[in-house]
Image (cartoon, rainbow over all chains, first blue to last red):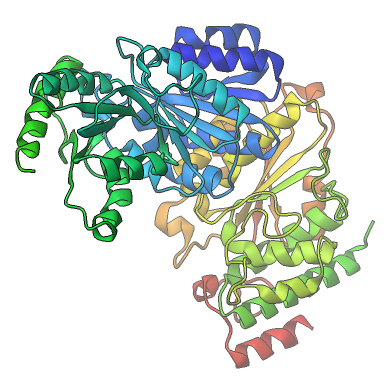
Length: 315
Length: 275
């Protein structure tokens, strides 16, 4: 996914000398083209994330379109105040790309496993948050970001098999930034999700179908601004709403959806079920495969299907 | 070229404007403002900064980044005297509903290049501006003013290392070295000395000056000979020895004037000294 994003930026940068890529000591192969062919538009800032964001702001204040990239914990947390004051407060055209969402670096430990990034980025005025679910989406959404104006936070984190774009059932010809995508049709309950863990939602949908529960799966690649209209619509039409995310249960997708639907419980006098599935408020100190870490956090398709079935029997 | 007598009068005028702003707004950092007024006077009125008050976003202009954001009143007053906007706009400083806060805010007034308020943000942004100027083959020079207390921030040293490594010779850092941070001496909190030696070891050309001597400031700020004649190009740093609260006797070198606002009696006394 990182390669897809950087190559998309590279192709745009070939045509636009005002596009810059700043890497934080991640001289991965995806930045090779930049380094070799566009050395004046590429900076390896070294291990200095505060400076990375400050330099990006200075470039953007001079009319440049800047992308910064590093591992999420370094890219967003080490330099949070710089992102807040230098980028968002000044409303600059900078995209902070964070690689390794959730448990992507599943054997690297908690220092490399961001579970709070969306919560903290979501609090920043002017910041827009995009989290593609697979490589194709990453390319398409990066193109949209290039055509737009920042600030953006682009959260990357591995692939989904099969590709989301091939599953889409919303009838739209192409991805529309900010709009949710129906990738599995169902009319009883809706599960909102984003990123690679959405494949577990698809697994859950199959299990639920065998139990007579028709689950709709919606990919929300935009966490901010989020597709409020779609969420409100599904709240009004479904017996239950669920969210699934590879992020803390505090402040991420579940919180964003709750912020929209909680006032509706009162207005519509509804007694719908809402439950968010995410990483509990604790550091995961064991390592293993990504699937294993999902499992110990109760986030596999089977585990969430079980919880959804239990919830629905209460209706 | 404005002569030194006129420059001293201009610095006094800026100090009076700051006094008015701080007194009326009941907020500000008058001690830190007065520490850097003479530096700002030299920058804006000695043909150092190439800026056009009638065209504040002129692409070829030099940039001045005020990193010590709590010195907002000194920057705003200087920009007003330079003619970027009418002096009357300063009356809004820290008033109810105004966008002129006690810390520098981008876009609130013409001529303000970036926001500041938390220490250690301005130098990295200035580095980005210096890179952009080089990328565009613009002759823009970038000047950035930091406080000495601010030099305790790690981001300052990240940017110093980077600018030295990349030989950003279009970048000039001025350190307002009054040796007073919020309530104590910098040298007693976390000292910086030998500051010049540290800067040189980071690949910067460094010099010490008296930050209240207009001639010394001007001479230090004037673009020198192309450094390539003497070796590799480097960014340069001017360590300006200053006095916090400079210009008003009872404020000078007194840490309580970091964030205190004058009462009526203090206002009158300060006004007399600055008249």
